[in-house]
Amino acid sequence: MLLISRLLDGVSDLIVGSLMEKIHSKHGKARPWLLWWCIPFAVSLVLMFTAPDFGTTGKIIYAFLTYNLAVTVVYTAINLPFGSLAALMTKNQTERGYLNISKMVFAFGGGMVVNAATLPLVKYFGNDSSAWQKTFLIYGVVAIIFFLIVFFTTKEAVTEEAKKAGSEEKVNIPQALKSLIKNKYWMILLAIFFLNSVVNAFIGVNVYYAQYIMNDDSLVGNLSIFQNIASFAAFAICTGIIRKIGKQKIAISGVAISFIGYAMVLLNPTSYAVLYIAAIIKGVGNAALSGVMYGMLADTVEYNDWKSGIRAEGLVFSANSIGQKIGSGIGSAVLGWVLAAFGFVSSSAAQPASAISGIRVIFLYVPLVVFAIMFIILLFYKLDKEYGHIVEDLEKRAKRA
Image (cartoon, rainbow, N blue to C red; front, side, top):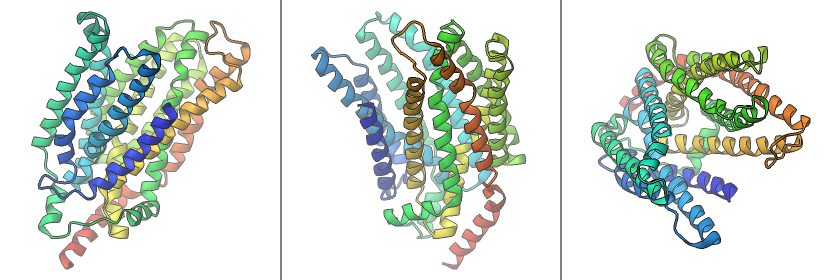
């Protein structure tokens, strides 16, 4: 069922991206989606954490339907337009960088708050099934408030500029998809998002490393806290240097720092001090990369317009999101296959020596290979240097038209 949900999620990305290209509202292409879908988003959260008494089969069906309603339909419908806003609000590279770093700061901060508050809230509301409903009702209401704040306080300056110039495009979806395949910088970002999702999926092995090698189940949560705090702090550094060195250099630095963090563990794989220091380094690297990835993706919109005459912000972000989800799905599947190949038995309290070796290989070496590949790929991303000329050329074309 999870595989089916992944496939449906990919299809919904493409549908929402295509529909975005057909929206010509007075509020823009992306902002209306926040208004339309904020309440359904809150409702779907509550439904997903509702546990009706339908029997075993009925509960499985209900879980499948509500999960896909919340994640495949509603979350996609509100998150993709939200993600593409930076490309529609400004063409300025640095401003896009700031916008996307701000987004990641709030995403990390929100995630930390939810992780810290959920179980205490559930306990406060009675620690039963209805307590989960009430907890996620609160989160849903907070989400509505924040989505409405974004809707009312942002403007799609790029969309408005196109309207005034009479150059709003009517996108032919097949042609737009072909143009993306020919967009070398979009393809580079697609590969980076894909590989980053693979690495994130492989983080699932951390639980087994803590349980079977370190014999400390609490280690995963503690390392995650250190890594997230480091990421949160590192975003501020990215904001300060993005104008000076550009997004590509920050991304490459992030990949290199992450590589160092993973490589450091090889010095002493069972040392708590090494693991915690490595977690901090990984957090800094993750912040540097994730803080600029979406800004880099937004810049490929201008390159696509310059090269093919098609902007297609919705498709740029939706097709890339599909790549992320494929990477996540493949990473999770490969993780399971590799563990099984090494003889891992999920129901066993103790693992054979071969399984322990498999856990070590995945935890210590696989991320190093992936980050090395990402580093090489990012060397070919030259859009930061070309961007000023591209925007200038697009403005000249618009004046001639």
